Structures are given as C-alpha cells and as structure tokens.
Image 1 (cartoon, rainbow, N blue to C red):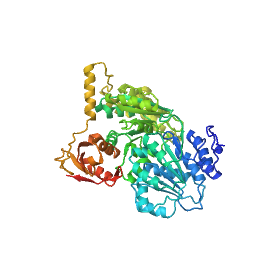
Image 2 (cartoon, one colour; image 1 turned 90 degrees about the vertical axis):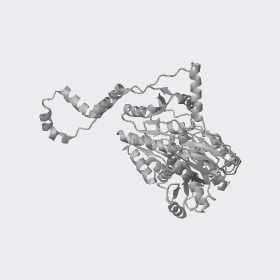
Image 3 (cartoon, one colour; image 1 turned 120 degrees about the vertical axis):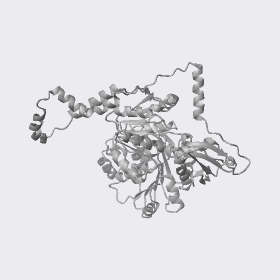
Image 4 (cartoon, rainbow, N blue to C red; image 1 turned 180 degrees about the vertical axis):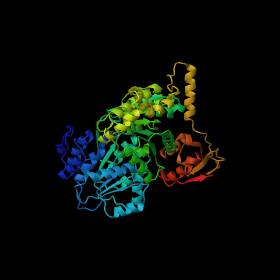
Length: 567
C-alpha cells in the first residue's frame, strides 16, 4: 500500500534518516524540517518514482533532495551515481557545499562540482579521482561529456534544481542533450518555483509518470513577504532608491537590475554616495565574485546590486529587503526575486520602483503571486531624518559601556563640565547627523500623482507611447541575396553577424529574446536586418564583443551559431 505523505512530520528524527546524517544536520542547527523537506524526504526514502516538486526559492529544497540522495549512496561503488543540474555556478557551489556538510559523518563520499568560469582542467582532474555525486551547470557538463571526461551512464538519480531558471537562461538544448544520454532506469527529480510550458515539456519527455507535488500555492509568493511599490518618474528612479535605503537604516538588501551594465552603474553610484554597496554580475571574475559575496555574507556590504542570473545560488537567510530597481522581463522571475527575503520564518519586504507605464505589470505580477502590492509614498526629508535620528539614538542607547571608560571620565567631565545637558545632546547628535540634514535640506518631493485614464486624448498618447516603447527597429527584407550588405551602422553601434536567416524562420522578436538571454536589454539593440541565410543586429559597442563571445558556438533550434563582428 502506498505510504501517505500528506501527514507532515515535525521533527528530523521522523524522516527515516540514518544517525550519521541526523548528527550532521543537528550540528548545522536544523531543528525541524521545512514544509518541502517534511513532504519530500519521506517519499524519496520509501518510493523510487519520479517527482516534480513545485516550491518557492529559499524553501529548503537542497536538503529535500540532498539528504535522501546521500542516504542511498553506495560508497563502495566509485562510479558516478547522482547528477544534480542547476543554472549558475553560485548555486552549483552552494549545493556542493551543503551536500558536503550533510555528508560530514559519511566516510568516503566524493562530491565534485563543475561549472563555467573556472578552469576545466582542474575539474577534469577532480572527476578522474572519482565522483559519487556531480553537481553541474548544463553548459560545462555537456562540454565534459563531449570530452569524455564525465560519465553519467551509471547514474541512478538525476536532479534538475531551479528547472524553470535553467530554461529561462537558454539551457533547453543542453538539457535535452544531457537527458538523452542519461540511462532510462534512472530516477528523475525536478524542482522548480514555477511550472511554465517548457518545464512541463521536460517532465513529459524525460520523466516516467511523475507525481507533481506542490508545497504552498503554485507560483505564489512566500507567505511572510510583504509587497510594496513606489511610483516615480523615470529620471527619479535612483533618487527614490536612495531614499528607501535612508528610510531603512538597518537595510540588508539585494537590488535587482535588468542588465550587467546597469547593475555596475547603480553600484558605482551608491559607492560614490557613501553606501556600503557593490555589484554582482557575469562580467566579474570568479575571484571578484567570491570577494563580493564574502563581504555581503559578513554584512560588510549592506546592499548587493545584482542581475537575476548572478543572484541564483545566493544563500543568505536574513535579508531585510529585495528591491526591484527594474521589474524583471519575465513575470515569473519576480517570484524568485522576492523569495530571497522572508526566509527561515522571518518577515521580508519586496519593493518595486516603477514608472507609470509599469503599473499594468504590477497587476500581472499580483495575479501570478496571488498577493496584493501596496503603494507607498516616497519618504520625504522629514520622515527620513526622523527615522535616522531614532536609529542613531537607539544605537547610542544600546552601546556597550566598558569599564575602561571610567579611567577617562575625569577628563570628559573637565571638558564638558560647562556644557548644559541639552546642548551636549544636540552637539553629539549633530556631529553624526548633519550630513543627512544638509543633503535633504532642499530635497524635492519625488511622488507623482496617479494619472487619470478617462481622458480620451490621454489614452491615445499612452497607447502611442507604449507602441514606441515596444517598437522594433526597421527590418529590410533583403531576399535578393543569401548574404546582403547591412550598410553603415548607426553611431555607437556595431553590427553582429549571425548565420541565421529567413530560411531558419527567425524573426526580430527571436533576436531580441536571444539578446535578453545574454543579459542585453532592448536599449542596447539597434537595427535588425534579416537576409535569406544570415542576419545582422546592431549592438552598442560596449556590449557587442560580449554578445559575440556568448553567442558564438551556442545553439539555436539545434543549429550551431557562428557570430562575428562587422566593423
């Protein structure tokens, strides 16, 4: 008879795990399983069926699949038995580290993580020394399989973690190629925060009658996260974010931007303005990324400005805020972003800074996460100064008074003997607080009123504005030849040539999507000219070479791409 897994266990001792794993879990400070752990672990231990688990980011999925995987690992068999695929190197390294901690008292377990952005030869050497478990990003694993440096022919379990994000990042072809090489007898476990059509396709094509387990509402936002938005003029977006930070003196946040370029620009501006902030994006070396993440986890940084891709795998449990400096292109990504806060039963706040054109997107996000946003007024000078003043007074009240200070009291009393108490308090607070008073003395009101939608002429202008925003640059038919001459590129842009054309049934929208996958926003994409067998896309010169390196050698609908710059 099939076990009833609907009755949630409330203690790790009830999950059916060995003493070795329970001891490691206890040392890590795990007191009771999260809902996804309580739901999934007993089932994976008792049954051998395929499972699709839908659960939010930060819900404890790594332990949900990691503990059962370790429980049934055959340590006497040196071959690879488990393959775990995830979208980014940060998440790859996090999962590997977590598994190593869980396996602390399991002698001889070998876990190898392989991912791009690091030397492949060192990873090949590690694999040759044996790997019971491989944790990998799809692109690097496929490269290692082609070199015959990795062997997944004997795996008993494959785990797809953050499956929706892997597909959002364009790993469809790599996943297909890897799953086709895995043995049919394997057990497949798919974990995802959302269930778009592509994830469903993976489940139907490569899994055997999977059970779909939903922990919490599908696509819903975390229960203990509140959602707010601030309505601003586009040119006031950065100023509004600074006021949000100043109004929350204890802020510990991830700030999400759309592109790598904007991420670095915002982080640089925050640093110039005196904030403890830095950027995390794909243009950083691994050493730079490690340095930034180390400082953020130590709270030497209070604001981490990141792209969606770079933020995958960030394991920080006590974020106070997630700030959407830009709303994500894909609505489902908002679930991943907001799920970074409100973890471990703590309250969290997700903030969106939007302009008038983006109000409709807020409504669409509300429909997906099944939660309402509350509009807040942008704090003014007085509100911010009062919050900062209260924070400073609390800091002084909570300061540790050490015995050493007693030896200095005679000098202190002598210097301050003639200063009245009220005057002394004013001087101390002014010394710390004058910067805010000076900055906000002439600060303008950033709030804008709601626009009326009743005016017909206003409606027409709004539609016209939206049409201009979505407009794709002009495209020539160019069917007269197989190649064609793209002509002179507009100033500040460079032509990128791709071996795709009308014969591949490609349209401008596909190219915009390809650039978006690379982290390049529409503002950096100019004209697109498509011919029979090739196409040219104008890219801003700052991102053109990056786009070429990212796209060259990749696949589009199973066609290997050749990308070159035409100057």
